Length: 108
Length: 111
Image 1 (cartoon, one colour):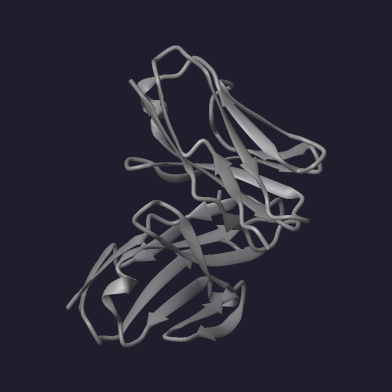
Image 2 (image 1 turned 30 degrees about the vertical axis):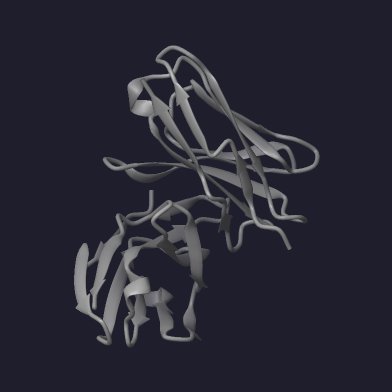
């Protein structure tokens, strides 16, 4: 199956700092999503981005499908950005393969 | 539009029992997928249903089963529960095989 690797595994940021999270995947995919898991366990959709670049407020994402990687940018981080960020890639049958996640801690 | 709902939210069962979890997708979505999240294995795909047909299945034992009804609501069942089945079970819905939206999850504890 498709392998998904996220880096770094952990990230500690001071409020206001910028950061980049990376997701590498081992094969071509039909779907790529970024999620933020809240403290109660729910996965919040950040981006659906099989290719190209998207922005939503302080967050943006870029997927270079030909090179099999995606990047999630967090700018001017806030304490509410803390949590686990997951990258997931999907096949043509709707199965999502998740990475291990990046644990982000934003300190005041 | 209402999001994905899952019931119950929390559940405590004893080894050997069985459990049924329910998922109602976003209105109009026909695909429902189930995932298991544990600290050791992370998020793993269980199965996916589209228009009442299972199209894809992950590497889980036969004790894990599911079904989808004509209104797209889905249930998953785990029989003969083991301690290792303690996990957060997440359901996701999508129109077909595109962007998936997740419910709040059911946290199952097996004692």
